[in-house]
Length: 475
Image (cartoon, rainbow, N blue to C red):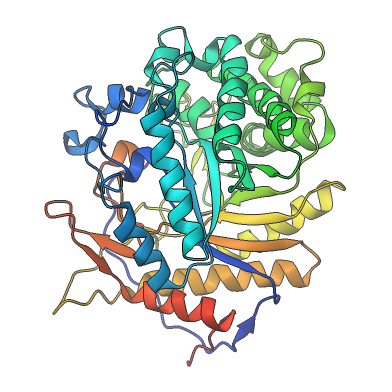
């Protein structure tokens, strides 16, 4: 994670023509349970690792927690109406595992299941397609007590949970993802220590990364055993790894970063094997893999979700810098670090690389012959623009979305089968270790009053959806 950003603006905007999308393209927005729901100790919900982590002093900016978040649990009717006003055709949400299974296994919390059933019914009543994700990092504390995904048994508990949710909601929810960005839970949570559960143990990180993959495969099989009419997928957050700055990044370490961040996730799912070069790099760190595991992981999928924010830009470690691992989320990488921050960036400090988005989608299309249809399940940016006379003119967010939607269209034109786009995020929320300081929402949340105020980008996105095209930009 990078340090606090400085305020920046985009340079002059060049003229661009309108860009239409395919007639059946699906437009939506995305959220995640712990980031918006609140009601952390209500409705029979059990604690998760993010409750534990955020309540540990020093782990989250300003001591923020998700105890209340956006209070979506109590405001779900109004929030769905907000989606309708925005013209959303689909809504991607995640289910809190500990809300429906307070210990992660065993006793079912009917009140928690009823909350998601109510949400689904509200969406369908308003013509909005639900897209449910089973795991967005909030592992039940009861499972963390038995070592979480470091414990192979948790993969089986996940499959049981997946079957339970399909049994409860599968008559109405047809589009499901097993995992969201499993790299983050594995490596940010267990190697870099900046996400829950806050460990710095490379072997644990690689073990979790494998057991998440195993859980995905077992989960897909369990869901298909419950129903045959589902559209099943998973959500990965790939990025290009590119050199920028001086000295040059080590080529072999760039390959390792790419392997850990990208190929580890796609190869077993789509090819039935882990990358051999990466297994050589990791050595004993990857000894959780057992014979037959990749066959369990390699299950046919109906779609895959791609979350994209920016390319990973790297350089070598300078002579006056420590050679200690600069990128803790990538075990074995010692002499490569993130590039210096660009002058123009988002409030996360992230570079703006829409050209990389196109290149990444084309790469996936080229590298994987059996790549299923893709949905962009997250793409967005953090900017905190002020409310002036009741209006939030977030020009930078509109510019970011314009550029990245054009990048998606460019990929489609090059043969990539992209069928939908979910903007991140519907509303400002608890941004994990950064608390409430980073604002990604189309809708502004006043975290003191919980008042919702749509930004200009919400109206812009509504018009994109209605026209099924990105509007022309005047120079």
